[in-house]
Length: 512
Image 1 (cartoon, rainbow, N blue to C red):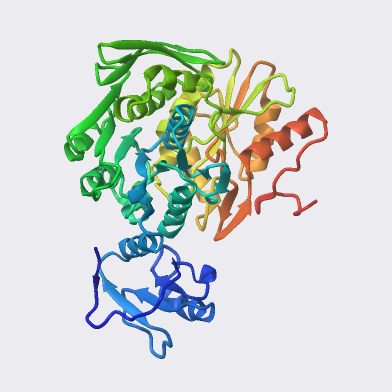
Image 2 (cartoon, rainbow, N blue to C red):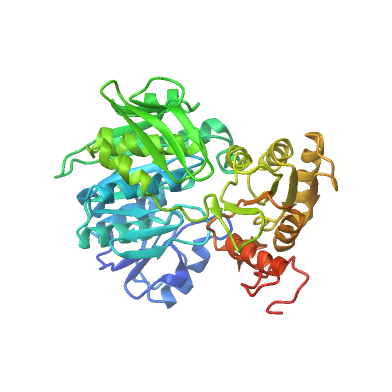
């Protein structure tokens, strides 16, 4: 817990807490936190003007402040999370809290667990980077892939308690863990998908990144005693390089899963078809069941095993119930999502935005077509620079044609990003103008990829998936890859359809 500066804590009634001065309401506390691009300390006057009853920060109080100021030492993010939890009467202590983390597959695995538990009659809520689902309500959780801020999480959890839910699955990113957004979530179980190359710009090294993921598993032993009892259990991927470390920092109760080795549960006899993924799941030595799901990709075997390990081995869902649920699992938005307007080739949108995820998506897509594989993707600005070298190499190796384009360049030069990507593609054996192209405007890249497709080919657009915006400089522009593909297909086929979203790289004028 953070320490408070010397002096009496002001006796002020607080009705809410926020780190964004624009959202402050009368009676709320404003937490002045220094972020990546802005310092909340500079926005204290705006927060007070909006009705802040108090301010909390790590620096001394500014001169002339008319409301009480609480100076703390230590992690202010933890302080905000604890304050938000207390304002809602610590809702996580009334729920069975399940955290799902990993580099790739978090949202899919979280959705699998949610669907299995609902199919088993369990009253469960879910918070992912796509949405929060609370009873019959579906709430958008934001533009970009990240764990929501702690006040939002605690508000969602409180709403789940009021709705009579008993379980919550929370998709948990490394940023969310490192920045204390999921503090006071009092986890009972933790699930890992994998830990591969990602976010090294933020964490500095793979080891630091792995340690950030490990915070979820270490937190299990710190969860306070709950009236519903404490599970304190981990679900670990025995096939992943993270296994040894996470096994060491996790509580004693562990479930392992594998496609290569015997584990608590393991898979073999894998059959990956264009319309169905099947495999045999061994629940230890006592039970073996055939699993079928409409999701493609051998990597989804691991995601299924993680979900089954949590639901069957730890939460007691009958294995037959869980397997039936996976057979009826609806598609996850932006994950190998097919777009079909009647064109004579396949078009898919996927969220793959890491080297490992791109490789797995392209390998899966290759198995779905007898024609050529055409890939469209970019690499984000102000993020891990190694990715922009690794991803073109992956695509040159696995795809027939590659279109390198924009993906959230932010304040970096898009031309410089594409130059780095093109050099990496050439080093991997690519030929610019032969099997790969630089197309700065993402809409144009999608158009050209679709125009290049012959009957029987497959075009896969990677990197954005479900996301609803793209960042240029510091502005988020409305963008949806699925809308863009539909718009480009309508243009190609000469049929009525959606309009291509506009970006600053577009040659067209907005709304033209």
